[in-house]
Image (spheres, rainbow, N blue to C red):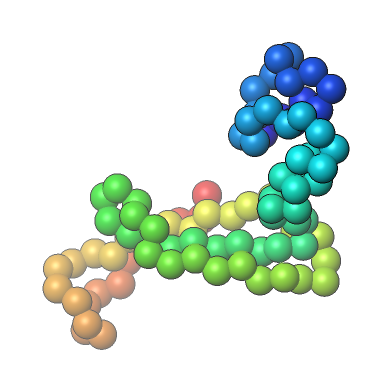
Length: 88
């Protein structure tokens, strides 16, 4: 989101209003850095978050990939037929 340090009334912000340089530093320290690879596993019709993880890398991470898995058939276990995977 936008951070408007000099004139917060000019734009919206995820952080709310930032009134000092110290508040700006505190906000930025809590944000993801560009060397973090993040992953989420979501399941169900509503996409409930089941698991997530973050890995620090020694290089810049740019962009994103989404992988959707659709399992066909009913039941579970190792004998259930697998579906196709589609990358967005």
